[in-house]
Image (cartoon, rainbow, N blue to C red; front, side, top):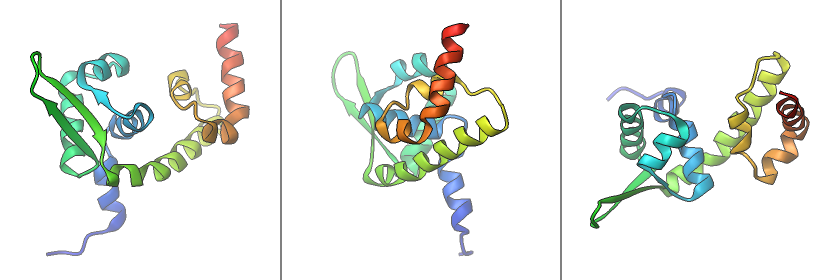
Length: 137
């Protein structure tokens, strides 16, 4: 077996348009359900299904199926997924700061779901700027 580059490994686990967002949503809400998440994120059913399957396969998310009618399925973070959240927080803060430095527009929804004090402590100036801009629009 060939040696695995750790950066390539982690990139493979979290790459995909929605994976980091899904991990954060599960962390923020404690669990997510498929249809609610599809509506909230405006992601296609195919992409959401594939990304959740990959996160499950990689051991970051657990799929819990309840044998009820109608069928109920929830997704929660595994201990490995929880271990990844501090790294995702660092990437999120870095990204918001860098987008701001480059004067690139930041999706306001990306700021709305990151309401914990840890984000506000680090990004208050940028969040305040976007709140002001949204209120004048």
